[in-house]
Length: 282
Image (cartoon, rainbow, N blue to C red):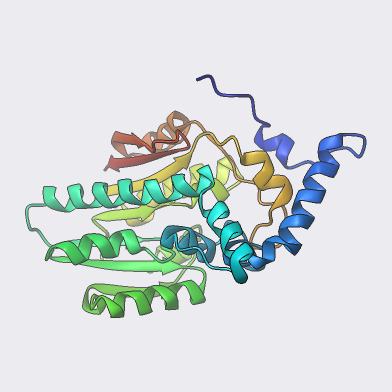
């Protein structure tokens, strides 16, 4: 089935003109979601913390509808069943499989993994809980609440001795420079789509190579999404502005990573054709 044309990143950064009927459609949809949609726990969390936040990602991963009354729960179930949400959950499984494959390929060697925008990181917890690997994992995030939620989940699973938690900005070279020892694997999932500036993302990939020089890099790229205009025009980001995600061809980001010094991309697409999950080696 052919993909329909969707607005480009630059177009989504601009407001629709007042004479365009779609301007009023998205304004009314946003108002509806803020008022009636607030009965849904997921939609409420999205407007409170941003639909690009680790908190809403964690909620989508859990996939357990909550809301006020029957209508709220049904609205929440509908939200969690959106294609974008289903793609989020599917790439979690892909990421889990890729990390497992990476650890299996290490042949029992001691491994240090650094997840630089970790969120809840339950895909890593799933890996560590299935088998005894000689692995330590650094979980970093800019959101302290998200890290605390992640820590509580790990304690319930009795994984605390394998994990280190730190506040940190993945895009800050100074913050990257404090990571020690050198990671065998760096994980950056859910990060690149909210980096709007191509040059900033390219610089970040060079910073990863120059500062951390990890043995491998795991990331994902949002390549296409039919709901991208709805998300940008009706939902909000963590700062309360338009939730604009930057779609990019996976080949473009792989090319930047290769320029930085990473090699041998292994690519897996989610079943909905939205995300590419990529493992590259140093």
